[in-house]
Amino acid sequence: MVNKNAVLACIKEPMAQYYEAMTTTLGNWRPLEDAAEKLLAGRAVEDNEVPAVYRPLVEMMRLIAQVTQESEWDWSSPAVQKIFKNKADSSLYNIFTNVIVGTVTAILKNVTIGTLVEVGAGPGQVTASLCEEMTKNDMNISVIISDRAPGIASTRDSLQQSFPSLGINAFVWDIQKDPPNELVDSLSRPVLLYERFCLPYAGHGAIDKIAPLADILILQDDLSLTGKKMAFDILYGKIGTRFLTFSESRQLLQKHFSLIHTCDREITEAINSSVTTFTLAIR
Image (tube, rainbow, N blue to C red; front, top):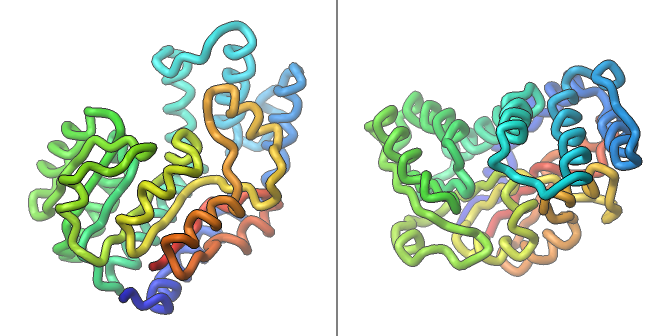
């Protein structure tokens, strides 16, 4: 049985740092939604109309509006890849990376965990940061990374070479489907599982695929608190992302967990955002 109060205590400091970073760097989320509304209406948005922190996101939305009006969206397009990388490397996404690394590390330091599982590891940048923290703190915890792309095996090999003291396994897993039996069989309880921005592409139903594996689950996804689609959601829907709500996610999580906690409620209120980005669930 996981000590829920201990886990909640662990996340206080990372969330305090997250609050400081978001309120200092962003201040207010509304300019991004204003830009999305203009682009959705077919109007131009110049870079000088939005704070610098939002510009990589506006570049992405601008490209979405342009491309989807003229043709089908193609993730392999060089223009798409370039702007997507700019967004992933932006200061905003660095904040997201820092808070997930800080939150997971704090839990690993203070709560007994048998296996750490990352869903949607991609190229492993976040994984590497976590592995570095685990190595610094002499944590001997099994690590499992997964992704729907076969390249996850190469990511695992690179991480294992960089962090030889850790045991790292990798599995190809599309979270719209049941996890591989080999992955399930390799788990040692309790399991801390986290995912980052996978649900927008997999949908709410993926919660029922990943939740049974976890004793502690961290979802890093934008979940609407109002249930109302914003211009941002409509634009991204043009490239196949699903509209996610906290209420529907909570209903699914309650089938598997006894505690569901919105980690960043104070932050969403402070920056005038209609979405929560960090949800914690404990069995």
